[in-house]
Image (cartoon, rainbow, N blue to C red; front, side):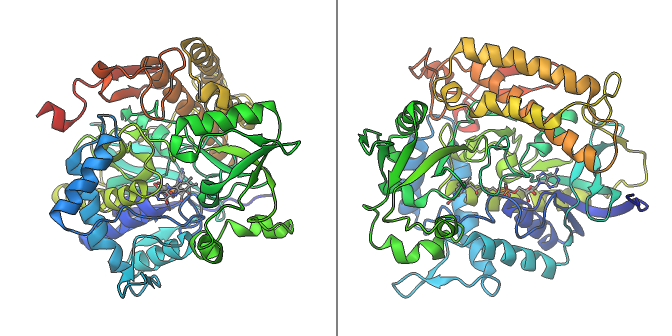
Length: 532
Ligand SMILES: Cc1cc2nc3c(=O)[nH]c(=O)nc-3n(C[C@H](O)[C@H](O)[C@H](O)COP(=O)(O)OP(=O)(O)OC[C@H]3O[C@@H](n4cnc5c(N)ncnc54)[C@H](O)[C@@H]3O)c2cc1C
């Protein structure tokens, strides 16, 4: 028998929801601005989220105006019209100034030329450093406290959040003057390393409060990994590929973008694919463990030398993690379209800095750091200005999975996640998008949504967490599908087999939102820059 304890209530200036690098930087930003901060994570701040398992590199260019301008121009050109130079400069500058502040918390190495090497860090130690930094600034960290829903004031602004503490077995609710959502992107439970908690919960909560999303069509991204375990991508840059009979496969290199993934997907459809990393640079071998500590162990456990032995590979979907879309950023303070609600990291759209192509590799981390700091500081400023407003009534915004529209009855959440995830992750659907298949997914996901919105939930505690995850994954799949249908062209990582050209008139951001009824709308201009 489970004994439930009395609910925990928290009152604070700023509430940060999430426990990855964006959440940690947001908490740090808010605390440095003088706010009292509480952070709630579904997992444990330090080991949860996709940074914790990786070896993230940050976009890193010295503050030389010419060098910075050249780097921004190069990257802006590949954004296919959707990024903004001012945001790109902002993430370069903020990262340059703030990453070195972890000195004393993170053991930065030398760069080989007498300087400190800041930009590339080992994920587990980086997250531990961020946790200790946040703790030293007085941030109250509540691990294993997943948020289930937002609380709203009568005027629709955000009043806090509520959830369930899964180890303490009690409900919690928090009132705050402002809330930062940093719950990461959504990998649709593909098995991608570190992404189990990334089910789009923050997007769902925000949408229930009326927030808009942007760039959800840019949701096609995969990691190549050994078939038995998702690892990081580094060693595959020099891979040669073979079929089960040992015949070489002609697969375009990773630099070919969509063509590389399409080549792999075609080969995987025909049968098992084996990777051979014998051609990997010699210099990589001794340092791989230092850069990507989670990559060698799955090979070692099987007695394989990853640079000598061929091994079978598979694609693990990354959804919106190394895809691009997320909550629409409505201004320079990383505010969403809901008053009092800010977004950071992968929960937010990264179109502002990466446009239509993935920001994985360095921009995403610079964005997570910067958007975290900006959102945290802005949330602190808002509370300093308007107060916590904790006296008035606040109503819970959560619907599907918590308060079914019709009768509550058992809905298989796992099956819902698999069904919804397949619509986004299945390589043949994702890498050769077509109106007909997208429309079939739209209808199927609409039926699934109706079933879970009408009937899922009604149970408290751990089942409520699972129900909300199923709801969030389904909502994310619907937004991605609707956006992919609406963008009837190919641009960046969104490739339409039935519209292979890039349409110059569609160099604009595509907004999406809604729960029972999903809507899409192109913005009038590609960016604030284009509008100016
Ligand atoms: C294979 C791979 C390699 C990558 N390499 C790089 C790289 O080299 N450089 C780069 O720039 N980017 C890289 N990225 C991207 C980068 O890892 C992400 O952009 C970054 O981790 C985003 O941080 P985040 O805090 O937004 O999300 P995450 O790190 O995913 O954190 C999300 C957090 O939210 C919590 N959460 C979720 N739901 C709830 C809830 N309901 N309540 C409370 N908490 C919740 C989770 O527990 C987790 O702690 C890579 C990504 C992948 C997949």
